[in-house]
Image 1: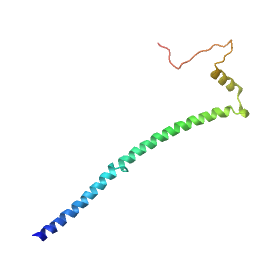
Image 2 (image 1 turned 90 degrees about the vertical axis):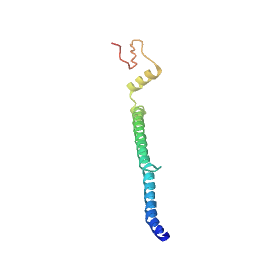
Image 3 (image 1 turned 180 degrees about the vertical axis):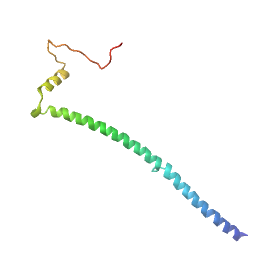
Image 4 (image 1 turned 180 degrees about the horizontal axis):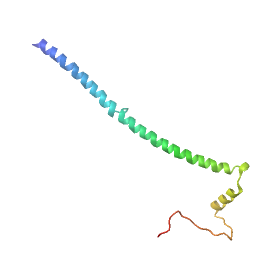
Length: 107
């Protein structure tokens, strides 16, 4: 009787432990710190960081183009005059100033 119980227990317990181990690793492979869901979250973070990097890179390139125009070898007098007027709020007496705040007029 006891021998038969041991044999049956061996046939039941070992597969049960195996199934439990597989379920444990499958669960942590999906929901764990390095599982599939964490991988998707990291991929979204990488995509957001890449978009931010691209925007900053584009802004830097625009600033570099403007700085290149201020290079003494390729200085554009019109651009220099325009920047000085904009930054220092200078204008000539015979000029008319139109302030555009970017809003559309009401209809």
